[in-house]
Image: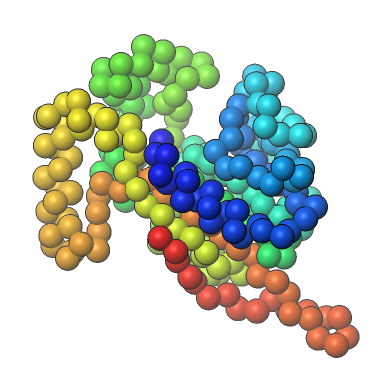
Amino acid sequence: MADAQALLQLQAFVDEALQGRTDLRVLDAGCGSSSYVRAPEAAHRVGIDISEEQLRKNTFVDEKILGDIQVYELPSASFDVIICWWVLEHLREPTKVLSRFRDALRENGIMILAVPNVLSMKGLATKLTPFWFHVWIYRALYGDKMAGAPGHPPFRTWLRFSISPGATSRFAHKSGLSVEYIHLFEDEGIKRLRRRHRVVNACLSLPRAFVRLVTFGKADLGLTECIVVLKKAAVARDAHGDGASDAPHLRAVV
């Protein structure tokens, strides 16, 4: 769950990145019934989701596609912005989907990704424990009596290491994309859980403090969520109109 500050910071970055651009086409991949990123008012927003029920509830998109982003053929170079918010962790082969997104981006297009940080304590626990345990956590600790019921979280998760912050940066470098923005933060639900349960807070705080100590603050197991913005490079064209993409450089903004 993104906290308000993380969303505000991301929105400010996106607003600046899209300033002055017109005729924008936005794809919300795995859109569900809501939206976390505001697009310019004049943008044409397309939503694709595997759930017909969730699509019916979505009032943020102008065009709706009932389909699976793992197999749906997106038109090449057709979107200026692709948003994929807490979806990749539920896919068996997320990097294949990221490659589809890259191909569907126009030049100078941006890809906005939100995923759990698989290298955090929460991420590793989610990856290494069975689904019934996730449901129990939601019911026993979060108090969600509907947890695990159809249409209610938690949902079955693969959480591949290929969508860790470092792996995503390496994918970008190999795929002609640059990392324009990256922000890691603690899940708002985890914060509330730590405030509510002292034992849980102690269990989470001690290993987090140890890792920060031994890595001199470079690693933090408590940063459970990650937002990344990738950008597709423009093609440098010669006098004959032929072009080749310039090699991108990685640039992270926190």
